[in-house]
Image (tube, rainbow, N blue to C red):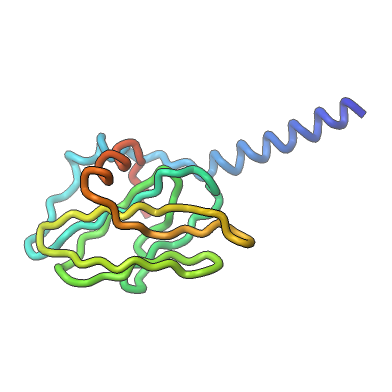
Length: 147
């Protein structure tokens, strides 16, 4: 009985390692990539979207800006979009759709954290606009996610 229990525990551990390693991001950290990012074009702003938590690593819903998919909510990952000045709706959807509205002005940089919490069947990911200093502090060790 003890041998079977050890084998079962080993298999469970192996599965957990395989699942979480498949969710790892391998790009440069924000700190490493920041100097090499393209400048923001005239009349546009930049929105950084990032997820600091590895909680619910398998839950990686698409992230939409004005209903167009721009990336996924990858644990410890970040990506950015440049858009003309204006109003934008950022959304994610698992069991429910969660949205955030923001206004972007020319040359402005905004930081949107993708939070995760418990849902009924699957975790919920929701976008939250954070202050620049908080966003810069949190995004530093997140890794660039490319499509």
